[in-house]
Length: 380
Image (cartoon, rainbow, N blue to C red; front, side, top):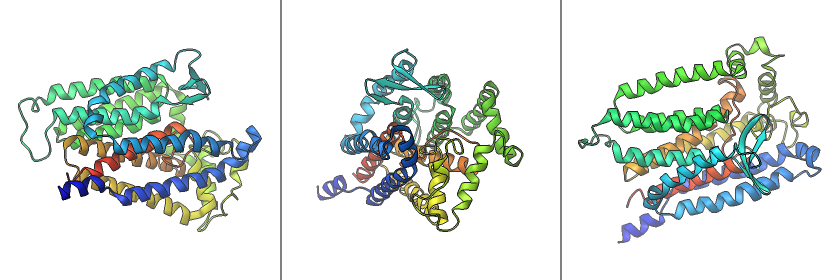
């Protein structure tokens, strides 16, 4: 009884502290980066900051706490319905009057004074659904598979069908960045469940073929690849924003120009969405190598604790869900920062905990709450 009581009250305090520091970093960075743009657009220096706090941070903390307290068995029971609801919202965004088109993409749903992005929540609902589905169909490492679990071919076919459904909704919204994150996370989750190697090879080949098809489908995606492969050739053309990103990061030096003193945030057009996609660039200029190193270190600690929770989780669902959540947050971080410094093609994906965007922050906090929930139950 004593051990059970202790395990129910114990959770990963290092992960909680790391998350708290990331949220504090996020608020400080957004306050600095968004002030000029907020003043220019709304005549209020703190518009974006207040919006992030009241429509992102506070509801995210509330829902994250609920995710921490809820029974994992309840999550597993209701997740198919939640995923279905999420997919319906992904379709509803195309209904005139409900969907909101921003910068040529219809990804937002507007309900009265509120708007949100269903694809951000699709990450967490699909991860949980896939974890529950895999837990019921595939054996654990080192354990003998039941006759039902040995039917790998049928399981693989169903997995591809489920992923194709998810992918189609994102392709319709031209949200290939989110699709890329979900693809890598899904692959890791599927591979982790002791599946045959030919499944993994097939997924990689199908992913590569789909990637080339999507690049050919839209010229701007091909431009991003060309810039990535030869950035020096396009510094004044299609690669101008990447060039500015690298110059801005480099100008920060070791200790940076000081919080609030970035020059690039005062000019629009130099960086793509400075309060969201490019927020790391401004932060790097203001805090230099030291600040960038500390921020990346926090994400590495998040990765370490997340994998520790995954390893110690008590059942297949918890293990797979924890792997999916930590992989999602860290892969998205790597893609965002990698794109800004030029080691990956430019994408339109936010930096977890840091970038402006209420939907992204709420979804990330829900995922973190579930990760802490899994950590408190790992020894029961």
